[in-house]
Image: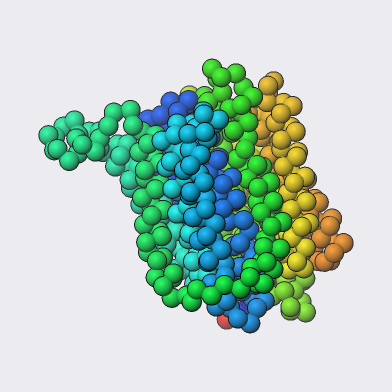
Length: 486
């Protein structure tokens, strides 16, 4: 129980590193939806989708490989330096290639070359901080990690507020030459990407001391082993990126051009309301992933993994039900422009999809600690095929509802596949009775609240209290042991 308590403490701090910055960035949703029409917000969302995909490609699974070999190898300094050199070289090659093909990329994608330039720079800056951030996590320095992450988003947020809200007013009301030279009308999208560039650059500058501390030795043998471990994770990551964000790109491709970007804008804005589940899943994963590797050799590791997954499902079920009950209140706080509300019907499906993905991440421990990362890639590819197939088949008739159906279908199938294969290769004694109880009851209560008694908070809060009592009655003894243990 002591190790679990430490895990929850670290998960809480990693949660701060993830939740607080994302909550701050939430302010950008009402800001963007107030200032940008749906079409322009859709354009931004499509570019962000490409960023998600290329972030995966530029990291090529090296972060997870770093954790594996950092805990596995005796010469940890060699692991750090080999991973660092690998990412520096690949990032420089990407910069040269991407800028040389910038105009061709603009013609192919329909995105302005200016925005592509900003995107290339952001991708390169983010790739160069992968190992420093992984090193902080591997050395259990969650507070430094949290401060860095929060600073990055705070800078991004501050610059967005300055460029989009303050600068236009200040430039028009004063005769300040500097402000007038900075401000350009109809430059909102560029200001958004400039803010990202500056925030990412500051992150890298603060982490520069890391690059001066390490010894730049490179082991070709170790590098090949790390790549062998990481390349299935790369394919899995690409598949994840397809599942997570490629639907915006497909909507832009498959819908009529006159409504495509507006539909993408509404879908992307309402999709943000599912972020609470994504935040919980991400924070938990970041805290638990190093923990899983560190406990891999323990005799009672399977029992520990099973208990962690049960707690994840219990807390995740509470979050799912809570968000869905108060969804319309959150809608008015976060998306103030009612033009975007047309896509609200997709939010429960996306919340459920993110919940399934969080469960999948917990179940995926079996292929990571047994070095069967290829299996993870195969599972993710199945999910990507489901995503692409449903989107291609249904978007022309169902628009973004097809994308929501595709997302929850893909993540659900991946969750079940991971459990089935995991029990075959690395059996873990999951308490299926309790896990299924929490999951099924929370989904049923959420459906009743949203589809039958939407905005009836008397019924919704009643269902919420009933579920809390259910979970507490099942977990009372275990929770008391964790809380009271010194």
